[in-house]
Each structure stands twice: as structure tokens, then as C-alpha cells.
Length: 466
Image 1 (cartoon, rainbow, N blue to C red):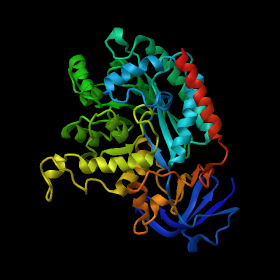
Image 2: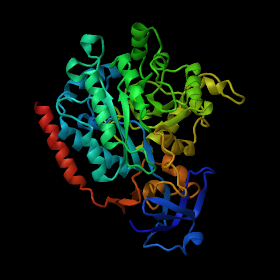
Image 3: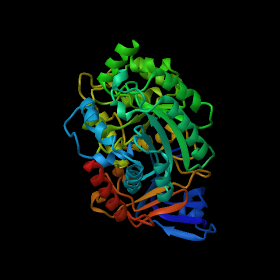
Image 4: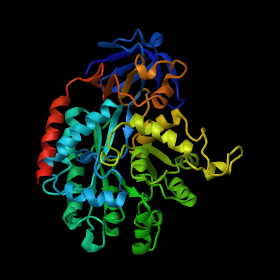
């Protein structure tokens, strides 16, 4: 790829070590790596094969989505008013009809939606693999569209007949799960810097797998460099009850008993955690993917994100599945994360000097920049990446640009960066991933969105007829 000079940026938010925000900023990109960051005056004399003028734009690192179930966009707006337990039991039978074509097209649609709303790196937790479904379909979709991708080999092995929640037809044999995980690591996992493809091992939840699979998955992952671990934990009170009845432990204690705390582990949701359990996450380096839309949609509760951040827990953002969120927009997740923390009853904050006490919220609970930092640096930390999440020399050339001259941003001259959260959500005008232009002037450079949506509708029609 040619050397690219991006110049005349109204505001360049680097999210680097000093959190520089540069007026009239510029980036110099060599192939897929950032060579220099500075002002237009500083970099304008640099040799470049191409020049991109981003006058009138805010530029920031591409956002990192740390929890998703992409196949679920085939079952959007269903079970709209149900709690998670009923929601799952309603949708499991439909998901049991999935095949590899459905997995592939749902991934392409999900990835396009993510990229258009500012995501440049995403994980995907595929834990239901009936019929001929494989993660290969999602990995191929990411390569086609150009998304930096961490494919999470999820699994359910404990069906209803064994005391688990999912129907037996939705589970796999544990030896088959581990064998396929080995295959995926050998075929697709790239632990090198600037990698576009990595594999994660991700047994679904304490109520859908056995402790033995959790231990074996952890052992397998830790025998390969850069293969991290992911699962759901402390998402619902019925999960807490299940863990206490079956294992005699709370969810966090159960996770620790099977070797699932550590800096190579992050969990989705983690709503129902005590202060001591948050301390344990901080001590072990265990991370959390905060998914505010999905938690609100299913009426689950509000994760203690302010307390986690203050105690040093790694926190990123996730859109979660498109059937528990119904959209895939990280600007929206950042906005809702901010708003939720401000209305949450922060007993932790109320005990501090100046705290408001009682059950009220506080407008200082989370700032717009902290929300965006979770979406960038925080997500990178969860995925074990030190080459994405901020803009600096040597980092991956992943950045997004939002056009300021649009109705939703009119009047935001005082703080155009915070406006991306407070006034959003927005779509990006430009997206570069690994130095490659994916979106230009609001449109995909090579991906056919209309064709993908037509294929998506056809797959849905076929699945619902079965």
C-alpha cells in the first residue's frame, strides 16, 4: 500500500499515553502502520504517495468491540419484553436451524454495521454451532470486508438432560469442541504485531458447559501465545442461583476455581459483583466487556463500571448480540455507558468526599472521554493488544473520521470530541483499517451492502420456513 498523508484534521484525538488532542492534526501512514503523528505544519513536508484532506472532520482511533454474537441479527426484535432466561429459551430452537451460509451472511451484515459506526476491530462469540456451522465462515467474512477480527470459539456442552439450560440439540461433545479449537488456532491464529486474525476460546457460560471444559479450554489457550479466554459471567441472578446450587460457589468464585481469572481473561457483563469480587478482578488483571444496551433491553441491571475503573479493572465496550441489542453501534454503547453510570445508585461514590449519598446518581460518574477510552484503549487491553486503540508511531493504521458539518453536530464547536458521545450516535465519513480505506465519504469502498442485505433476507426466509 502507498504512503498516505492525512492532513488538515480539525481535531485529531490520539488517545495516546498523554491523551493528546491536536488541532489541525496530521497522520503519516506507511503501508499498514502509523509512521508519524503531529500537526499539519509538522508533517506537510513528508513524502507521500497519496494525500487525504480531512478538513472539517474529527479523527480518532477505530473503536474495539469486545463482545458480540453476530449470528443474532437473523433474530432481531424478537422476545422484546422478556427477561434473559425466557429470551434464551425462545431463541435457542430458532438458532438450532442455523447453517454455515447463515453464519457467513449474518457476519458480513454485522461487520458492515459495526464498521459504519466506527468499529475497526471486533471479536465475535459464536457459541452455537449446529448442523455444519463453523467459525471459518465468520473469519472469511472479516477477510472479505477488511475488519480486524478476533474469532471466539464458543461452545455449549451441557444440555438440559445434563442439568444445563440449552436444549440438547444445541450442544456439542467436549472432545469435538477442543479438537475444533486446536484446528482453528492452527489455521487462523496470528499472534504477531499488527495481526488481522486471532482466535479466542470461549465456553459460553457456567450454566451451559461443565467445569471440565472450562479447565481444558484454559489449558489449551495458555499453551498458545496470544490465545485469550472469554465467557459470560455474573450476567443474571438466575446464573448466581445456578452456581450456588450446582457448584456451591458464586459465579466469580466458580470462575477462579476452574482457572478463569487472569490478565488473559475477560467476561461479558459482570453486573452482579460485590466490591470484593471487583477487587479480585483488579488483582488478577481480569477484564470486563460492558454491554449497556443489552443489559437495559433485558432489564438486567447496571454494571458497577465506575467502581471497576477506579479500582483498576480493565473495561471495554461490547454491542452484544443483535437480538439482545438489536443494533451494532459502538458510539451508541459509549453514550449509554456514560448515561447509565450517571443515573446508577453509586453507593461506592456516595461514600467518597463530596458524594451525594442515597440512591441518586451523579453527573460526574463517567465522562465522554472515559466512555470513548473504554471503546478504544480499554477494548484493546481486553483483547491483549498493544498495537491498536490509540494513534501513535508504530501502531496499526486503524482510524475513523466523523464529518462535523451535519445536523447532529451543529453547535458543538466547544468540544467536538465529546460531541461524538453526547450528541450521537453517528456514522463515520472515513474508516481505515490496517492502512486500507474501507469507507470513503460515508460509503464502503468495495463492499456491496445492498447485495449483503438481500442475501441476509433470503437466509432469514429459509430458516423461518424450516
